[in-house]
Image (cartoon, rainbow, N blue to C red):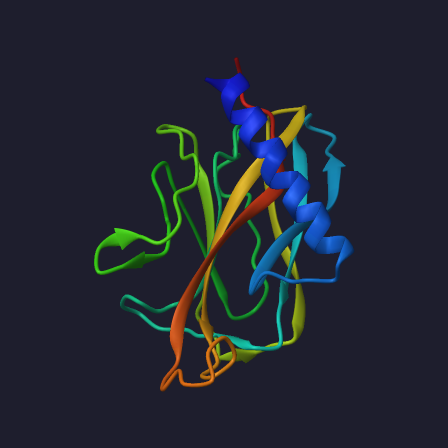
Length: 184
């Protein structure tokens, strides 16, 4: 299963590389900016997000808000190690969080039960793209890396995808990101 997961994720990574080379941003796209080895043998993953110019990232307390991003299958997660920039709240679970519409998932990442998923949700004032935000991090006990997946939900500005679009709409994306290697 891990071999199949890696092959599928390599395809996703190739698409991400092509889009990056073309200068495209996928609504709200997290990337790893540094992996730091710590004295205690853990590894800190530092992330940034890039928000494109046609979306907002909204806060809220009930679905479909707040907007968020999730890094799936973050193996070896060290509890209480996550850091968030101002206006963001961290949570972790072993299932989800994925963007939903009408109770159904809008994206279908490979989500392995029992392996932590890391989610940062917007709790501060609404952000308008384009923007780049740093200050997200989490530690892992796992030394190796692999190509993993993220999912994100943002609010698309009316008329940016379809000129007749009458109101804001939620948009979900899935993409590739470096994550701790899954144990075999």
